[in-house]
Image (cartoon, rainbow, N blue to C red; front, side):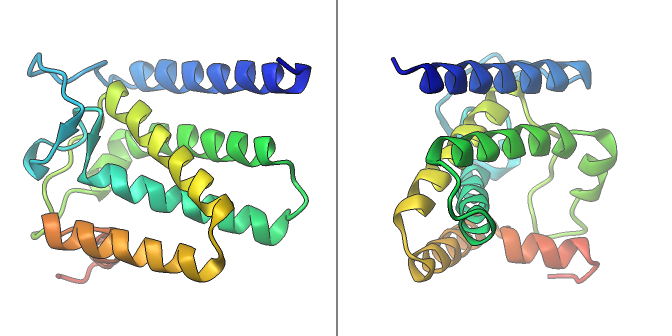
Length: 176
């Protein structure tokens, strides 16, 4: 294994460990308190507890966005640096998203499913979806990225009455 790749893998593992420890430090459970571990949780009323759920798809959009921003502002960055940036961005977001203050921001006035915070397992899954989005973003043209983000948001919006656009409108106080 080339030395640079080995260093990147160690850094990636370190970022994941810091994320997991940060989530535990703010009181997030390792897995669902229900005692069951599932790969997919389709029920929006039980989201953010299993490895993946409808919101995990939105994390693909996050990865696509990170890749698009990096392509625009740092087009010569090595691919490994872009993936590590996406991973670090996701790790920071997962901790911030699970702070009690931020969880209260996501309590919907109506429409969207309730949000009580993620498990560490769900945050790891969401971070994996960010990496998938980053990998896709590195291969798609701008039009493809935009269409995929729109398709993902439309799919999630239709499935669970929430998404990037609907959630954003709710955060600014519009009742949707």
